[in-house]
Length: 508
Image 1: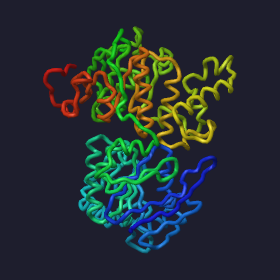
Image 2: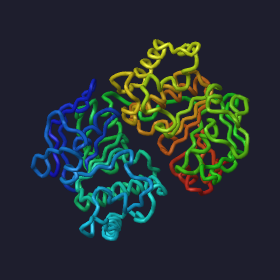
Image 3: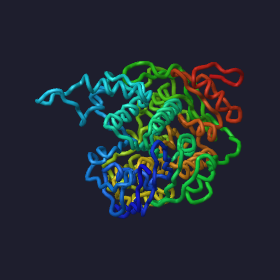
Image 4: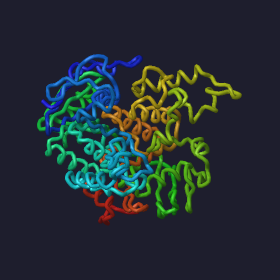
């Protein structure tokens, strides 16, 4: 056995993150590690990579017990980790980013041997089909290519135990398929891979063996050749989970959101939204599908007041909002779940309670004459933490210290805690486990049935097909087709996402 973790235990204040966890992974195999947010997956791998020290338990590599004082020790033992949030210097090029901290020198004064580093990076890129330009600037690379650079960093350091933490969290479906190919190539060459995820289809696609964690313990193991998605979901959550939330037929009412001839530019002043027309009615869920980068982000920012229109009309509840501020849009009863929770959804240094009232701190009962009512704030926050199963020792915990999935739950719980007429949800379940996805989808359907108009922007086709009453597909800044939920399939939505024209039933 290449790698064994035996009886690993790790405590933090108020949280038992890992409770006597034992796992094993063989050479040239992919171990899928599945679990809810807060199940202890990342903590366990941070111990393996030397970032944390276990309170008790042992690490064995090729039968030899190893103790890592820091990540450098783990790297020397062949352990490399690709974190969910990439750790690359934006202004470096690929050679500099990969070699940083492991530079080859060519003389006595320590001059960086760029040519030697570049040669090795090109060889690794070709060997594992990573397809990375060694001279490209990190800041100019798409997200999927940045992830390949992170993998190159580990391979450059001779890592043959590779940990991938939620590797598809920021990837498009096409980039995810490319990642699967890279993983299979690495495993075929003898690399031991631990693939951390909460996505059932991914672990079934790529893993040779599966271990499921739940609340800091091993809940069970499974063979991907025989186990079902439903069995894995139930094992993760500890109860029966509905993978597709049931919903009755939509009963559309009056138009709540009206878009007409909307053009929007990005930060580089390139036109990203090219004449979008769309009506979303009360009691209707419109799911906007498309490969990331086709104008969805800019469209959402325009609707919510975060980005100015170049031209066009937007009305919400009959009121023009083309020049409205985000607060003015929010005050119209618009809930916004942004795609980048770290930038637009939360303030990491603030507590959960403070984040929970970011959009309502100036309103009663939370504030009167500029004075906070802390009891009201705490009561509302505690209810949200309970309802959305936010894993935290306290509502005073810093939001930035939560896992990515729990941060997303804070945002969603806040936005759904007040009455709304329109929900704009961009990637609402990104980073969430099956139990939380089920809960949020239920809440979206409840909002629809209560009369709200819902817009969901998602790159997850499963989500689009499961939740949307109508599916609008964006390509190159335009809505190239609108399908009813009953008529939409992987095939026809996928064709539209790729820019192909579709026959009857597609209409802009």
